[in-house]
Amino acid sequence: MSAGGMGPTLDDRGARSLLRTIPVRKGPDLQWAPAEPPRRNAAMPDARTSGPTAGRKRDPLIEPRVFEAAVRVYARAGWGGFTFDAVAREAGVGKPALYRRWSGGEELLVSALHNLDFPTARDCGSVRADLLDYARQWVHWYRHPDRALAGRRISLDSRARPALAALYEEMINRPRTEAAREITRRAVARGELAPAVRSSTLPDLLVGAMSTHWESTPEGSRARLRRTFPAYAETLVDIILAGAQAMPPRP
Amino acid sequence: MSAGGMGPTLDDRGARSLLRTIPVRKGPDLQWAPAEPPRRNAAMPDARTSGPTAGRKRDPLIEPRVFEAAVRVYARAGWGGFTFDAVAREAGVGKPALYRRWSGGEELLVSALHNLDFPTARDCGSVRADLLDYARQWVHWYRHPDRALAGRRISLDSRARPALAALYEEMINRPRTEAAREITRRAVARGELAPAVRSSTLPDLLVGAMSTHWESTPEGSRARLRRTFPAYAETLVDIILAGAQAMPPRP
View 1 (tube, each protein chain N blue to C red):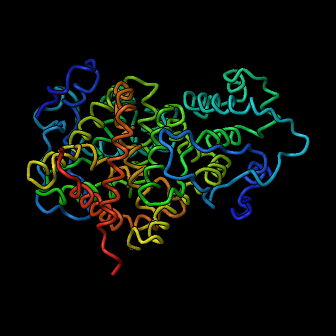
View 2: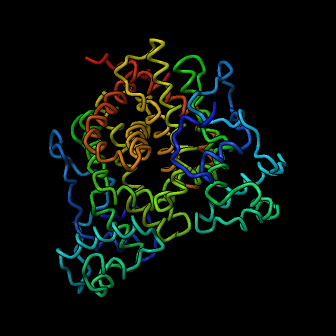
View 3: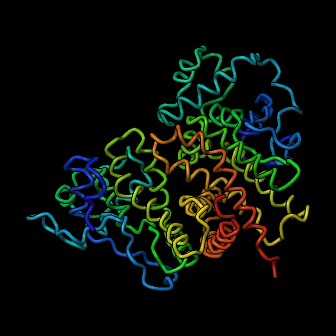
């Protein structure tokens, strides 16, 4: 699909042009494979239907390295220290390679989070499989402390920076919120949940509990948490699902 | 109780001296009163058992104004803009009044959050009453966008500032995490929940879902959310409780 349905809220150097030029986002490197091959959610932007901007040189090996470096620099130094200079140094590439590819820090940072497996709910055939798959993507996400920290920073830094806020909303927050809400809509359509359950409730509970648990664990205990997190996440799925299934149908 | 049980992790200008001098923390201004008068949780620091530092002038009218101003300045300007100058200007008091009371920005900021009704779980007689009371404190917290934003900022800003991190951990995070975990321990003791439920799970789900719901709601829709948040929070309590009650006892 193209990004045409997202509405023209950004100018030409914004998300729409970004959507045409970002490389294809690969599926997350899951710890456990989902029950069946996930189907891409219709709400997710996808660059596959349109080629790279004519004349732009592509080096597929540079981009993953720059994305990792960008998230590392941003997580550690915040927006104040997030410069093309710092990212180029961290990635070991020349600054021109960055200027050829990204219009500015906003585009580079949001592209990096988008391409580094920012968790995205998928259809795995049942509400339990969907929730487990989503939980495992978040477990994987928290294995990379820089990504988790960058994800927290960006929503705060977006407040004073409308260009960053618009790109983040368009590329990350809105499509992923939508994809997560589809878990409940599919469950209702399959007859697994009563229509009384709001589509935001399940992802709020799962993602919220995982992030709160992570944040309230002191740094020194996080190595241990990384080992127990998969089992904790599965318990959360069990509780959330049992609780949602106990909800009476809307009166 | 005194803070003696918290361990000597700070120097004399740190949390232990702060605990002796902060004014008594009043209970939150709840939208709904809890079922019965809450009992103060044993894990919470309390300044009532020790008087103000000898010779320090107290003006009870100044402190609430300074706390509100401090949280406002910090929420808007972050740690970089959080100076005694800016807080004094915002509060309409002289800088000497601040220097007389607080040793520095860390102490002022953490005291402010501590005194401005940072949600704290309490014993209201049953697990459902405890969770509803805690949920309502969070609803109240999110009515003050500056407080909510300050609470998110401080855990990020603490990363590079050990003095702020230690005070935040000692005064806010550790005692409140502990108080929240008591909800489950009391429920297990009352026979309301099976011992299989970990004490962190219920607060992770409740606080996490509320904060995720709040954060993923665009600014423009938050006025509406403020109206629907109490009902949403109550639904969360229902789901969490039904889910936790469905957990089998530990094998």
